[in-house]
Amino acid sequence: MCGLRFEERYGEFAREYMHVHHKTPLSQIDDHQNHRIIPEADLIAVCPNCHAMLHHHPDKPCDIKTLQQLMKDAPDKSDINDRN
Image 1: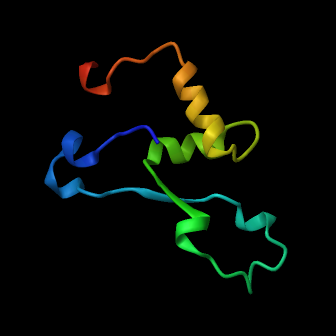
Image 2: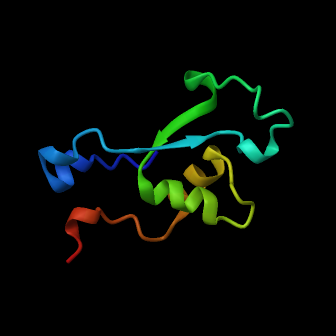
């Protein structure tokens, strides 16, 4: 979503580190015990910050497109690597 590459930021040990977000919260699935998750359709890999913001948003969780638009519209677009 945000393009953060942990390997570039933290080094080799952080390569491919990510969180996995359920596009539809399990709490919203009626028969979640018998529900079959299809990874390609039901999950999305996101960085921990994006994952936190998906769940922190007032819509709890907000959808991916909403968060992407919020990031695009945010006033601070500076690269994290440029910050002290």
